Amino acid sequence: MYIDNNNQSYQIRNALMQDLDSIAELERICFPEKEAATKQKFRERLAVFNNYFWLLEEEKENGRTVSMVNGMLSDEENLVDEMYENSNMHRDDGKWMMIFGVETRPEFQKRGLAGFLLEYVIEEIRKQRKNGIVLTCKEELLPFYERLGFVNEGVSKSTHGDALWYQMRLKFKK
Image 1 (cartoon, helix red, strand yellow):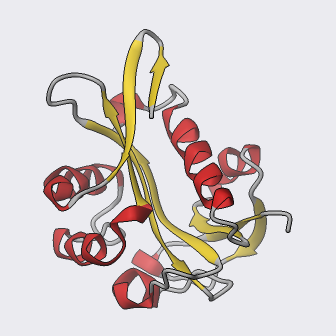
Image 2 (cartoon, rainbow, N blue to C red):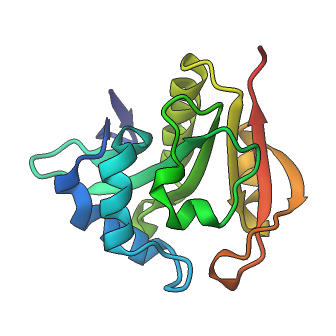
């Protein structure tokens, strides 16, 4: 899929193993070290559920990845820390999409790109007839996710990266 934003063209596609370096770099830029997934962890995730990694890239020759949404499917209703570490918890027929990260390069932030990519992901998951999407975020991002229809369920049990997280849920009507 292609989009135009401020006279710049972008492409949305699923990640491939050859995107590993750019994915790891984006994660390193966007998250503190204690919260960021390692390159090895991304390698494991891509091997198991690459179709749940969406990249937004500049539409240029050798366009760079500017935004990413990634996660896994689960029958669990809540995002738990073990999911970040154990890629084998992914279930192809899982009822819930668990989003691990929504990230955009700092120089591309405040342009609506992460929101656009997340809207695309929401529609893709809705088409798969899942129950909905769950993610955790920091307090300052609550309004962003609420604008997209997510409901704040309060402080998460997650202690990932020794941070305080809020669990957000977007339920699809059945």
